[in-house]
Length: 227
Image 1 (cartoon, rainbow, N blue to C red):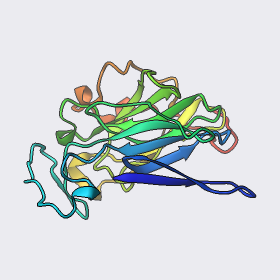
Image 2: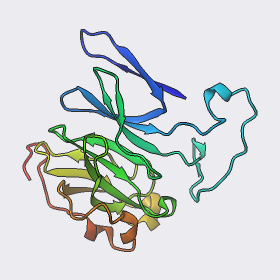
Image 3: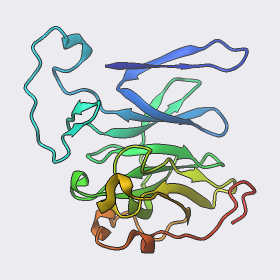
Image 4: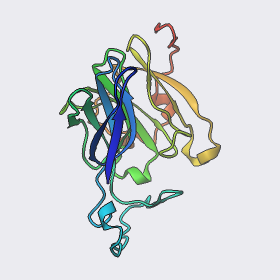
């Protein structure tokens, strides 16, 4: 499937940028010159729009989390991050692999991107999410800032990260006890963007710990940029 993005500003003519994959989220850089895109992987062979008239291939279930309301059966595709240069239309891959990345957000100075990802050995069986930060350039390593509980892939239990104006802190909403599922209370958390451990230690490795002990909770005035 090809996805087109129409980009324009006041007093300018909108133009369409087309590439393979579905854009599921995006965020403008502070200077307006770039976009970070959250893009779903290309459809597997036989499922593209060009094959709609053909007999669909059999559904092969190889995931623990294999079906979703409204979406239907899930395959092995994941969302990954791309960097789009608005002037040239050139896109570059920021993340890839078997883990998906969600809700990308630019830092105020436009040098870093924060995002959420589940990177346990089997993300389908683990409710621990990680808040990551990476430089806004291809091949940059993602650094784990903190880990927390999220009940699903929806904004009802997790939220996109929000940077403080000075770029020192990141706020986000997360769930509490995953055993309570949709009845659990969500809480506002604030952590230092500098983080507290290396991304080599995946969130799933600490899934038996109390998430509250893993998240910094100091107060910060996000409106004034004071931390």
